[in-house]
Image 1 (tube, rainbow, N blue to C red):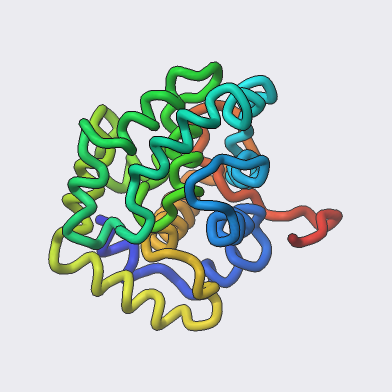
Image 2: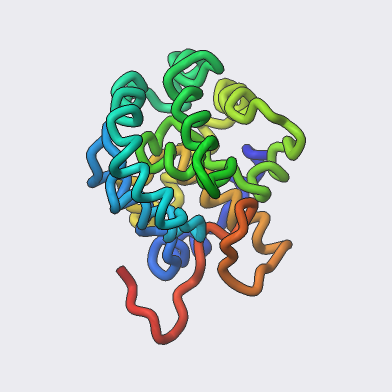
Length: 221
């Protein structure tokens, strides 16, 4: 289904997302932030995807757990993307990324969605965001080992070229710093959202509304 979504994604939808949706700021924060340290910008990036981090938890990430998180981030390769052969090792269940995911999940109010978004803002080309829309696209709602099916999907011969073709069709509608993984994620979100319209932002952990359109009174970032 992921290939079909990439093939069918309309350029108009991507252009709208990257000009009028709050989620577009996530990718800029990911590009500009330090790769091996959580910052207040990363907490803001999650809020842009409707996954606000509870204040006390955010403070712990920036203070009490900062050294431990930095050590694990330094052990996660920053130049490996999910398209690379090394992605399976980088996202292995006994690796640093999995350990950091477990640490995040152990913190108050951080469930699978928020944990994945915190990791994705640090490794936007490697770590896939998990929410109910992407689960639906992968038919993986009950899969506990989330990264394995995504790595498998990207290892198929068709998905990479389909995303390459989508980026070529989109042209300047998609900023160059948006990774292939995020481009597919946005396309999946737009595709599923079009058949499951939501009333607005949600702060629930399993929210799929990770890119809220700006209202007429909001100023684009």
